[in-house]
Length: 88
Image 1 (cartoon, rainbow, N blue to C red):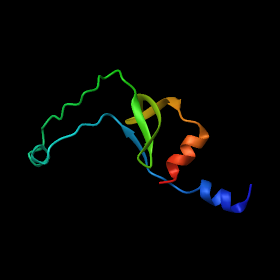
Image 2 (image 1 turned 180 degrees about the vertical axis):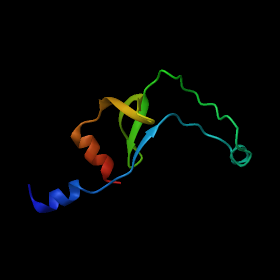
Image 3 (image 1 turned 120 degrees about the vertical axis):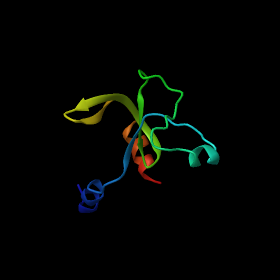
Image 4 (image 1 turned 135 degrees about the vertical axis):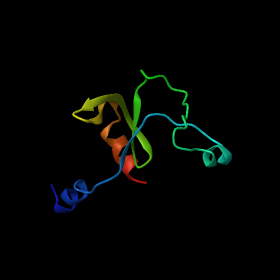
């Protein structure tokens, strides 16, 4: 493998696990306080979304890893799809 490729493969990128999304008005956002519950339209048994560079690349289920959360991947895009997600 060329040295440049090895360098690229060591780069770190943000990986995000999305529980759910919701659109809110500016007024609703400004009225948020500690203790406020933001309801989302997603059931607890639905898969979570795995995103790289704000692009969906897979799905999975939440798991507990010691005292932390993790994501058990159940579906992942092809290598080409994942590379495209890195492109910005």
